[in-house]
Image (tube, rainbow, N blue to C red; front, side, top):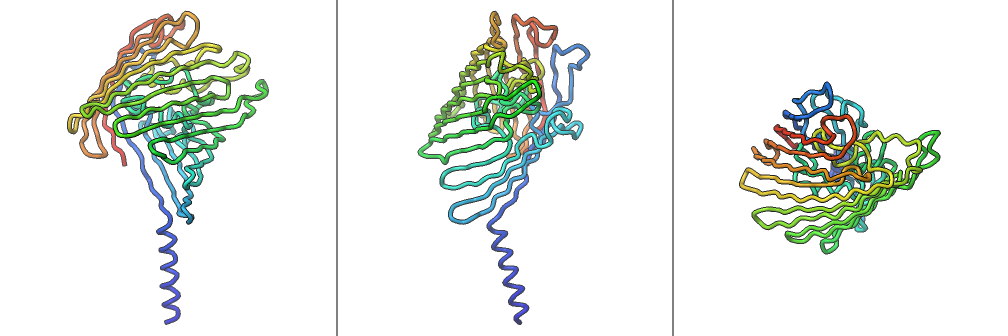
Length: 362
C-alpha cells in the first residue's frame, strides 16, 4: 500500500510540474509561382518560390516560476521549401527567425539572444501583406539592422525589452554591444532600437528609432485605422547613412531590410552620409473569405545626391480556405530611376512582378 501511495504521489508531482510548463510547435509553409519581367543576366523569369521567405518552424517554451514570473524561450528556424536548406540557399543561419530566452513578469518581458529588434518586430504592420509577396510595400529601403549575412531586421548579442500594455501604450528597447568585425575594423558602434506604440479601438500609431553598428539610422512613424469596411495603413520613414569612416573595412553582406520587391529592390545600403525619405500608404479590404490588399510606396534611391524617386505599387487578393490556409495572387510594378549600375532589373527601368501560391499555418 505504501509503495502504491508513493507511486501515486510521484505521478501527481510530475503532473503538477507538467501543468506549470508548456511547449508548442508552430510554423508556416508556403510555396507558389513567381514571375519577374526583368531579371539579372542569365536568371529565370519564372521560379517556384516561397511567399516572401516566410517558411518556418517555431518552438516556444514557457514555465511558471511562481510569483507572477514565467521563464520563456523561443527558437525560429526558417528554410527554403524547394531545397530544404536554411533560408536563401543556406546562406542565412539555420535558426534565422529567433534564438532568445528570458523572463516575463509584471515589469514586462526581458529576453537575451538573437531576434527581431524592438522596431523591426512591429514595423511589419506598415505593410498590408505583412512582409510577404512581391507586392509588399517598401517601408525601410536601404537600412539593414545588421550588415552581416542574415541580419535583415535582426541583431545578435542582444538584450530585448518589451513593456506590458498600459492603457493601450507599449514600449520596447533593444541594445547590443560593439564587437570586433575584422583586423581592418577596430570596433563598431553600439546598436540600439527604441519603439513606442499606442493601440485602442480602430486606431494604432507607432514610432521608432534604430541605429545599426555602422551608424546608419532609421526613424519610422506608422499607423493604421480600421474603418470597418477597410483598414487604412500609412508610414513615413527617414533613413540616414553613417559616415564613410564608420564603414571602413566593413563588408555589407546583408540585403537592405524590408525592400521586399521580388528581386528588383536595391540591395545596397543607404549611401554613406546619404538620406532616404520613404513614404507609403496601403489598405486591406475584407469581403468575407476574400480580402483585397493595396499598397504604394516611394523613396529616393539609396539616398545619394541626384537620386530620383523610386516608386512601387502593388495589389493582391487573398482567399481563405480555412482559418489556417489561404490562396493568394499579387502583382506589382516598380520604377527605378537615375541608377547607374548594370542590372536590367534595377537600373533606370520599370519592372513587373507577379506571384501566386498557397499558404498553410500550423
